[in-house]
Length: 119
Image 1 (cartoon, rainbow, N blue to C red):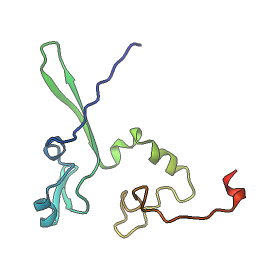
Image 2 (tube, rainbow, N blue to C red):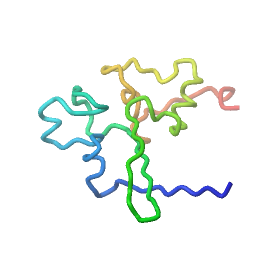
Image 3 (cartoon, helix red, strand yellow):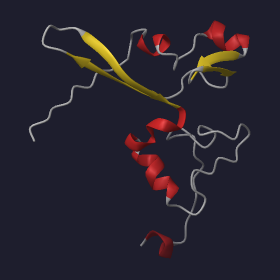
């Protein structure tokens, strides 16, 4: 169809703060943040969200869509894969939220699986 999509990063600018998905240390210290159109407990410095914009022939930019919380899972491939596993996303951690199970690559303990599990 010849469609092209331009993606832009929010790295090193205030965009995520403007759209209430990143929170300052002061906001975190207050214990409440504005996210997904409501006040909620401050649990992590950055939550997920996705926004779509349209630029017309004159160069005017329009904000056409935003989604937060569980609404942007369609583009998060890892969630789709986890949903097929026996424990799913295993949201049984201390906060019972989507981020309880997330660890950086070097935070997992090594597991020695039997060889037959790896084939």
